[in-house]
Length: 48
Length: 296
Image (cartoon, rainbow over all chains, first blue to last red; front, top):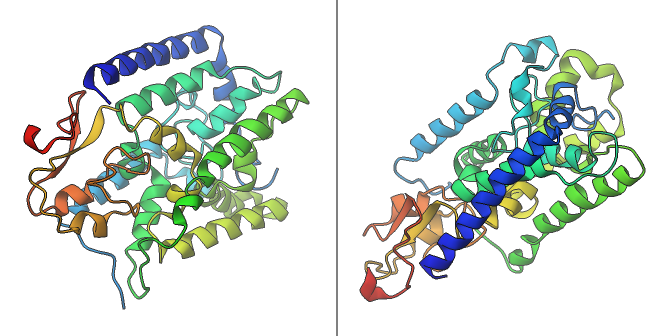
């Protein structure tokens, strides 16, 4: 892969990643992650 | 008796892996309490496969969070912008270097593989087909089935429920010992069986979970060609001694597959190279851009 192509793909994906992260925060998706992570995940430990 | 191939400076990587485990799981006293951390830091995804039901964890597992976000937090299916943002940024900057240096379960497999007395297997016929399994795990257990469950209005993290060995080792077993022992059932013993099989396999093959089953490795592997952390190969210096191939924990040929999605950027090949033909570097500039001997 040519260097310029790789830099272009990298830049587009980096911008997309940042935009996704910020839009996710705007949509309050943080709370669904926090909610799942702060309660014992019974499926994860093989009980649920 | 066959030993794992020793490489100089390997203790540095094992130390970084141990430090990464402690940074992601600093609340060690909770292992004795049978409770998990509930602070705000748990809304942030950690780079490695680190179960958020591990009592000591202070961050969220990206694969668990991805499944939870797909179901919109028990409400309705949703596009997981927030978690995908983390995965994109982790993948673009570090790629599978995370697997080699930061993942707690990768560290455990590395430690188990170092146990001698067992004949070590580097690869075997048709192994490459097994490596595609991790993409099936990602598509079916992490995305497909949790999404189907979400359409029914329930959140079922299928990967965590039936496969994740990190969840069993760092979350399930400690919590079953301290608090939930009376509630364990079929799925617990199933997952203990999966974990035991993978650890036994780790005595013979380096990192079997990373090679064949890890959905996080499948995601990060897609970024290996463009990630900032990359492997530079100077073909002009190479003397084809084959040392890099014999020490690779993922069973690939680093000089032919330096951009492979399988490479975990552990640097064992670079450290074992007698002529410094391989280097793990950080940056957008790759010396092997043109793949010509004269450019090196």
